[in-house]
Image (cartoon, rainbow, N blue to C red; front, side, top):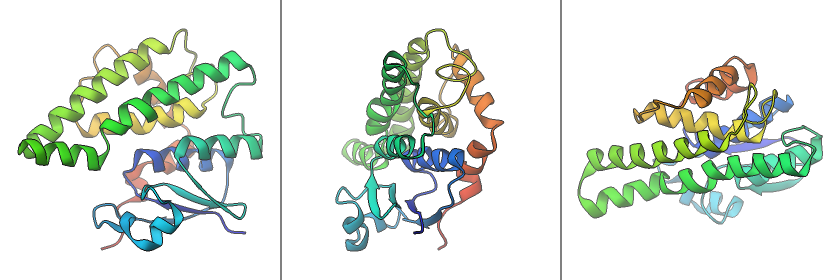
Length: 211
């Protein structure tokens, strides 16, 4: 049964899942859902995900939503090792992943930032200032949460926290966020960039949906 990822190329959440699937070596098809064209609000996509969000992953005869839930499903059904074996390690990785996926990402979501810009009438200037503030604050907290990090967010192999960090670093570069003082995060990002599964998931490798 084919695995299908309903995806938007610049979606951080979709990017996380692409990395996880690539790390598994799982064959999958990408079906673009163009957020700018409001395709995520179509009846077809709402049938996949009533929230009208990406990603949605069709796998093992079921439709999964929410990137962290998807990654944990892949970890549990494929023995992937995306989370540590010990309870304390799993709690740490989940906290790191949540610091991005549940704190930074929601306030920097496209529809949230667009609404803020509409309310203030500030346009692109307000949008950029908003992104810079919340991404910078979130990454500084993430850096402090790392503790004694190895080559990756938790130890010496990439896992769920790294799958969240790398897309957020992409957004930080895109919005010209000040990353001074984030040496460990930047080192982890460089280490991840050398792994083929991460490189293949990069938005520049996926590209926007055809017009």
